[in-house]
Image 1 (tube, rainbow, N blue to C red):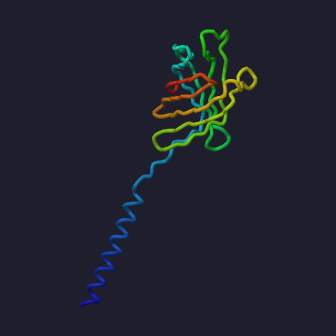
Image 2 (cartoon, helix red, strand yellow):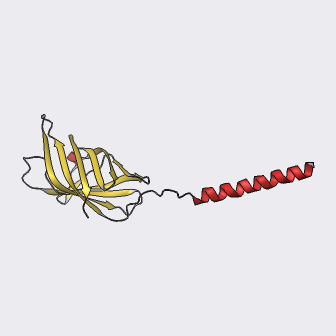
Image 3 (cartoon, rainbow, N blue to C red):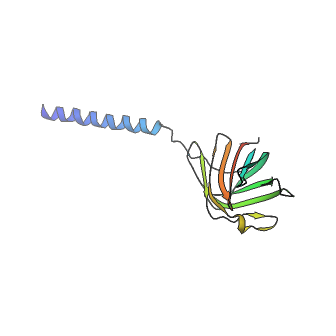
Length: 158
């Protein structure tokens, strides 16, 4: 009788193992989002002018491009003006911006990045404290551009 009882326990144990294996293998694991192609966003840019006012621009386009180095992107701010006193609009490139991703969003971060504009580096406007995310087709950024706080919120252009 004792051998019969232990055989039943072994069979039950094996049945439970098989059931739990199939149950766990049927669960779909959430894959992290991946940046595999360029995305261009259109939105609002706000720059604190350090005098109690903000300069805002609408319809500012920002292009996010995956880098050849895994885990990095390039952010291009296209035809942007940071102050009403700027005589021209320019393209500003922020390279080697780190990102991580989950199944729900991409988180962006960077610090001490010298931007490129008008064919050269602009160390006076080094990007610090860059944070942001891409989620559900929305790009949000916050950073210091030199001593100027800057925020951007845009939606993906299709």
